Amino acid sequence: MNYVSVENLTKSYGIQPLFKGINFNINEGDRIALIARNGVGKTTLLRILAGKGEVPDSGTAKIHKDVHLVMFEQDPQFIETATVTQNLFNQEHPVMKAISNYEMAMESGDDDKIMDAIVEMEERSAWDFESKVKTILTQLNIHHLEQPVSKLSGGQRKRVSLAKTLIQIGFEPKHVLLLMDEPTNHLDLNMIEWLENYLLQEKVTLLLVSHDRYFLEAVTDEIWELERENLYSYKGDYENYLEKKAARIESELASIDKAKNTFRKELEWMRKQPKARTTKSKSRQDNFYEVEARAKQKIEETNLQLDMKMTRLGGKIIEAKKVYKSYGDTVVLKGFDYTFSKGERIGVVGKNGVGKSTFLQILQGITLPDSGKINVGDTIVFGHFSQEGLTYKKDMRVIEYLKTFAENFPLASGGSLNAAQFLELFLFTPDKQYTYLSALSGGEKKRLQLLTILFKNPNFLILDEPTNDLDLPTLAVLEQFLIDFAGCVLLVSHDRYFMDKLVDHLFIFEGNGVIRDYPGNYTQYRILEKSKQNLASVSSDITTPKEFAISKKETVIAQEPVAVNNKKGIEKMTFKEKHELDNLNKSIPEMESKKVLLSEKLNDASLDYNAIIQLSEELGTLNQTLEAAELRWLTLNEKQ
Image (cartoon, rainbow, N blue to C red; front, side, top):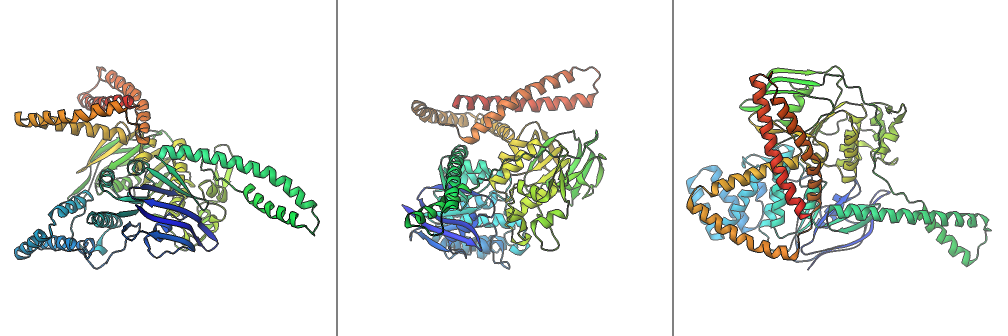
């Protein structure tokens, strides 16, 4: 069934065209990722399809009459004076009303209201759906349902909006088209993984805007890219998209080179022509302007080569000694003790609200600890990317704003880049450099915030969710910069791909002030956690003879389809799995070397008792990680 038909769709803002004459169809079961640079029309296109205040300049977008369209937006709209419950269930659907009445009755504690609500739930057969609603609210950490929406933080508002979207699609039996604009922003890593599984189970047709490459890999099977006013389609996963796009650009560059040669010949002919032209020469003249347009096309590259002159790092970086911090009953740090080394790249992970941002502020001296010391080296220059976003007192043009920090950016080679060159390096075209700050998109403001920090030549970068609202081309630029960066990096991010590519080890905030140092990246950590869960599940299965019998029966049933699948051949590895295998090939030898080193240290007769205990615990954790990594490597290698 055809859900959406779009023909010759064009949209511009002023003289700036977003897309021109694009055509596409969305059919039932399609799961499509829409990617592009910030400010080129991704959100606008979604809002045109949804009829949310945007209309095209020309062309048509037709939605099938039987299709129910649901959209998750970056800036959700609520009834500000209403409660969370009222906003979640302000639908006319009778099942939704029954659930809303039941939730409000449970919050009130009135027995009579609760009994009436239960009767209504029975009459509407709403219990199954109510269970699904409870799961959504629990997984997205939405509580205090009687709180007014106006009192919620930005992250809470996004999660309530996401819950409302998922609830909406839940009571529509079929033909649902779900449009999602950056749904993973403000979700922690566990929430993102849960959302992946939820969307895979729901029978919805999906058009998704996201910069999270692992998320795209998991939930979509086709990628559309808006670029230079055109829409390009790529079937398959993210890796296939990268390969096909590279081939397309190579072909376009060859075509441009050919047009340039033709243009030079035609330009010489034009200059020799007399003013009075025949019909034949007029036709050739018209063709000349078409050739000229092709010859002057620019294929913008996003590769960043920035040889920055970083502020020198001394021998002392940062020492944290027995640091404690609490807010009331909430413990953030409990005796945190760590000495940072040169060139460390640490990822910070944990659920929302466990104190990650507070920890970053304490390291910089922005927030004081309750007790303990933070000793910062004299040469340390912090570069802090905060979640608060771009701040400015008065509106001004982009290049003027950057010049308030410095006129030039020094390079290690001895030269420098001026503000305009530095902006262009981070994908701000000359035209965009003279745009007012207030006219920038959310992602463009984030990008500008990032480069104002880099423009100060820091040697210790603290990045708190830097990937939120950034587009994929900008992420590629940022990744390359951080890979080449010689200083220290402390990174808080819910982007698993970004984290895996950049960090050496993790600080895992487990709650109640406990921070665990894990030697590996996020994917390796999740492998270990899942292996622990599986071991715990196996242990619980053999606690009684009855449970063992059930487990054995399930195992036999599960083995049959595996045998059938093996006859058909092994399933192709996904982009995420290939990336994971590459990581394991690098990290397993590193962990083995570290294991040898730790074992040698333990043999030192001069060690005191505390050092022996600490090294033994570290070696035990490393052995668990290494064992889980080796098991996963065997699985992936066999699949490959």
